[in-house]
Image 1 (cartoon, rainbow, N blue to C red):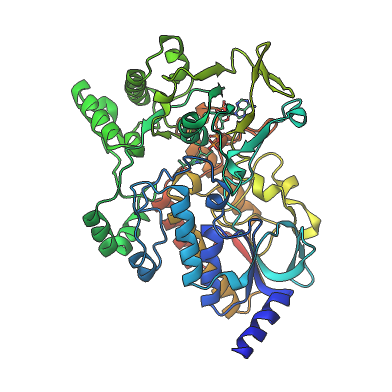
Image 2 (image 1 turned 30 degrees about the vertical axis):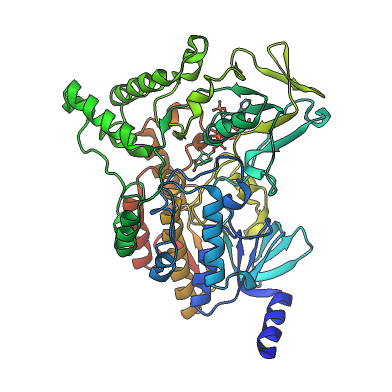
Length: 544
Ligand code: N01
């Protein structure tokens, strides 16, 4: 016991590791576990005071996963899944965070994690072949490998509104929600933003607030979530098949198996067949709707059928004729902005104390001591909730001062848009890995499946480098160029670039407008990863 605690304190004081992992969400937790399995030392730095990543920070009322819980869990350990029982079709944030803590306990992960510590810089020393990583707590550690498990939606963004610092009430961002929660009872509340976080939180905030004003810039497609308690037999069945289900999920486009994509284009169906397909998928709840036609995300004609259907169903719920047209999305195809799953969202606007302001017609001018001014009118509030999203996919990476060969900064290299090979690394940055980085399926897929795919690939790679005594690995520039081109071409074959979405970086003023994730699907992408590894890391430069 005494020896163990000595070892633990040696580890706590250590400044040299085989790997540094940034972030203790699903990705960082599993990465640590795999590196330990290779007998390597690693330190995880995490800004929060516990594990969880996204699910640590997004504690806003109504926060809930939009991938079904039986699929949104680790698939690498039969024991972990056997001992854990989900309660609802879509797990709420507290349950997911409990699950992550359960896994951290089970795998004894925390002893290699340093919490409440934000990584500020990482610089590659070419002579030593080491990364030096610095934190806001004054740590300075070295490691051969630096692995960014920083998440795709973790850099919360409050728009630069004039006057925010003068506001005398309280304000919150959904992605950085106070741990102790917020009581809106009897308060006048403003919510800005109607993406997934707004759509989930607005109904619950409205339950408490005396008055709620929602500022909407873009009306979004919202589909019924169809959440429900999970029956025992469904749970038991899933426990028996999870590992093989996960293998199957890895071969699909989205990393999920709870629904399949139709193989028939819309034009090859009769109007009745299209209607039946859309209706049954709508009633299923969740993202199944997007699989109604083989070409739903590829042609305007097919998409239009689905969009019209969705608008008609949304219209049925909205009672107030004055706002019905405001709430119906009509400026982008369905699915090209992330769909929002609706649990009482549209109904919320039927309540007399809930008001909707169209920011397109009446732009937000400033924030005052007492509220928000839009279209020349002041809306008073005790609290403002920013459900305004994230600097997605790149923000968490470029906010760290990352310097590769010759001191080149990642943020400079990516000034015109992210450049990666396979979403795993970037030329000029040896031994730096991104988990679910831009250029990989990531946010278009079940994140846990994509995280596992990357963690396992990176762990195998590090294992082979270590065994072969190889100093470094980094993408070749030409392979990276070809990959970036390929990612762009795939996106151009879809309707995704047709909306101002965070997938395109369009929600951040000045951010290059580039579709960042890989749209070819998890299965195809996985085959590519396997081919590259089997061909001795084709497209990568190995340093002797
Ligand atoms: O962020 P968003 P989010 N003035 O960027 C508006 C995942 N997620 O946190 O659409 C006025 O989608 C902005 O308007 P517009 C999921 O992948 C998952 O909601 O840019 N409004 C938009 O309405 C999701 O997609 C879950 O015109 C401004 C909103 O703020 C992603 O995270 C739950 C504005 C931001 O929406 C991000 O979702 C939550 C401004 N200056 C999140 N700036 C689930 O698992 C922005 N907006 C269910």
